[in-house]
Amino acid sequence: MNVYVPIEVKVRELEGKTLLALAAAERGHTVILGGKEDTLGLARRGLLKPGILHEKSLTPSAAKLESLRALREHRHVVTSQDEESGLLDVSYERFAQLRYSAETCALVSRILCWGSHDARTVSQLYGRPGQTTIVETGSPRVDLWRREFTEYYSKRRVPVADGAGDYVLVSSNLGRVLNLKRFWEQIGRLREKFRRRAHPLIDEEYEYAAYRETSWQMRLLEEYIRMIRALASADPKITVVVRPHPVEVVDAWRMLIGDRPNVVVTREGSLSAWIRGAKVVIHNGCTSGLEAAVCGVPRIAYMPIRSEFERTVPNSVSYQAGSLEALREAVETILGGGNLDLEPDRKAEEVAVLRDRFANLDGPLAADRIVDQWEQLAASSLEKPNDWGSVRRTVLGRRLRAGIGRSLSSLGYRRLRRRPESGRLPSLTWHKYPALGDSEMDAIIGRLKSSLGRFGGVVHQRLGERSFILRPS
Image 1 (cartoon, rainbow, N blue to C red):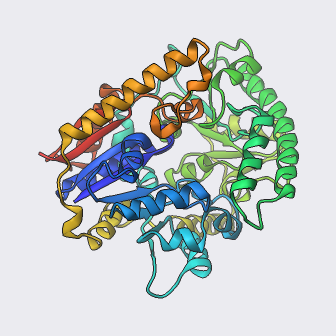
Image 2: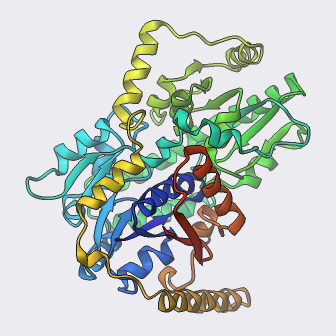
Image 3: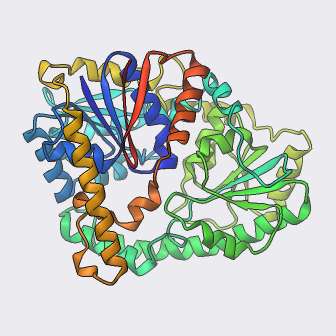
């Protein structure tokens, strides 16, 4: 069976989706894994044989509807799991209303949920007898949070400053103020959403909320800069690692923090690797708080300024510090070998929150559960092999056109810029998913094979700048 798995954000999705691709290839399926240009883009143009196309969202935009209809026209079977998760808030309803619609749900064969929390709401809002099946599989990203992957991360050195040992990880979620897109460009994109989506929740008030959220994040950023500098000054032997969100500009953090020899700002490697090695994770409303809770890594929600935009769920499974003094005391306790003990009731609530949101904290891996669902959709029409020579020529042609387009653009011929599917990718796309090297992919697959003792019969080879083919040997 052919399987096509697009990746949008490299640091967020690459390892989990590589695990998913390996699980599918282990069972005899052929998988294209990588950038949307070589997976979704080729599939919706009919340049790949029919297969399972695993979407990362079902956002009800005109472009998404057009894409889903094109996939159906070319006889692909679509499954989806929302990579944004939507699990950071107490209620999933608003997220589900923004990220799904009855029309997009009707165009896919499976909606694969992270856990009971999102499955309940999606079923209530969009479940229809005899239509799309909604299944709690869990996410492959959460698979990598489990104890089975301790060895996987122990074999991976995180690149902190020379000679550094212990480090504190500060995980940022300040995408409004440090975004690659300037604020007015973000507002412009919101207005474009208004134009394209007739949705009751997308209106001018939604736009004005972005102003209030940005204002709060700017004030929070001030407190985070103070905190990072204070931690770095308090103990020069400890490295403070700042991990920007995928949409944030790394150099912005460096310029704001200034020259601090024991502060490292990096997006290199996966967030999971950094969390596993940290003495403590500091965040505010970030998925890293949930991941650290599952992994058993100490975590502190730094909450010096309260706001309507605060993501309460990750903070609820973390020790909460409302001032710099309280945070420093908590960090000193952890670095000194102590624990931030929670009351028994808080611990029980934490376990309940995690189990409600993540279906795959134990038992079969989500990767295997998803492949189970794909195999229920198997049909002879999905097994016709691709003509790899033809596919490679198409990929090479697109790359050549993209190179010419970039060269002309750099010379000032901006009117010749191409649409993303024709080869010219927006800078934000490459910011989220830069090129993927052979050695990087070899290392990820090699560690997964040795850590789990699986996938020995799977081989991989490059397809495009950001994509690989995985299949049985």
